[in-house]
Image (tube, rainbow, N blue to C red; front, top):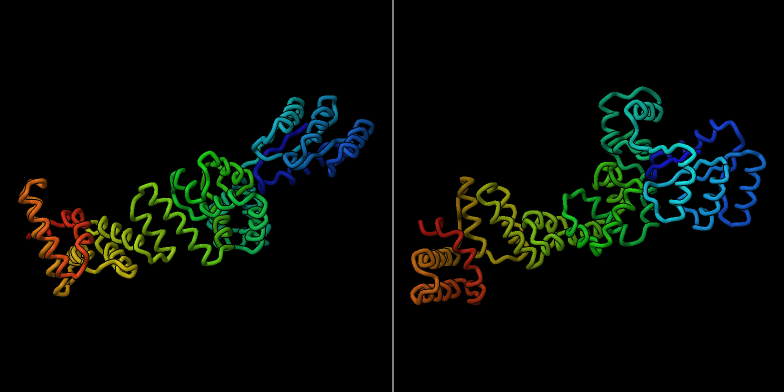
Amino acid sequence: MTVVVGVDGAGRSRRLGEVAAAAGRPVLPVATTSAEELGALLARARTDGAMVVVDDAHRLPAEALLMLAAAARTGVSMAISRRPTISGPELADLDEAVAALGTVEHLGPLAHDALSAMVAAVLGGPATAEHVAAVHTASAGLAAVAEAVAAAPDGTPPALVARLQRRLAGIGRDTAELATILALGLDLDDDVVCAAARLNPAQAAATRSLYDQGLLVPDGERMIPAVARAVLADLSPPERRRLHDCVASALLTAGADPVRAAEQLQAARARTPTAATVYQQAADQLRFATPDRALFWYDEALDAGAVPAVVAAGRAEAAILLGMPVDVDAATREWMISVGHLTWWARSETPSSPTARRAVRRAVVRAASVTKRPRHTVSSNSAFVTTRSRFLTR
């Protein structure tokens, strides 16, 4: 009696074949799920003293599982394989019946020697330690994936892409959407992942299905690198951009770091008012620590339609820190001067005082008239203005 447990691609069928070959008795594989035919097979097993072999027991209907469990308890020799997750009481009953009279084998990642032998067999000769290590990194040691990428660890073989196409086609839209999000390899909180995949948090158990199907690393929630490449390779450019846009929206909803949201929007080629705002926020956050990156995001904001006068001050700060000349037009210079008056009053007066309120109104009117922008778009930048007071009022 043997139970072989492992994710898809770990070698369950191969190991089950080895167990059957070593049994020293006739073998009867379960190839039918009808009660009548299964009953006849079990009767024959009792008569001939044969071993009943059940590959992928998790795929059998409940009635067949109960019949097999009853037969195992009456002494019919049996070897079964299944995924790590026990999906129902009938499978649990069969697993208990077989395990009680035999052994349970858990198949994990390939050991170094086994992986080296597999790679050598694919290459037709010994592989270097570096090549074997690269295969292990790409496959996380999962046998089926390791074999697929053994010749080119950094590649995306068509056979692996086809394997993933079949997997994703049969797991449902929600789980497939989750797989594409995880394929991006981003370190996202659970709520962000669920929002990006349009899953209710209660449906996050879909991750377990991806693990059972051999798509995730054994010790975490990350997707196996070679599998992730295969998933993304099957997406068209518009699908890939939509994926990044979904992640960006989820990050913004969760109030995440604007730089992370900006990276996803930029990957989605977003050129919307929202994207312009996020690009500017990312630039503002980076302008002192990494001014070169800040300039990149200011340029992205401008390309997305940001008002040049709004980003001028921050862009000037970043340029000065890089030792670059700052060239602003007259209107922007006047706007920055007006903003300087506003921030001077904001620092020197109580914000709620009549004097401060009058100063704010005067600065907003002046800035609006110079830049020919509505007053509300100028006054809405008061927080943006205050952060630049030291630079603007030197």
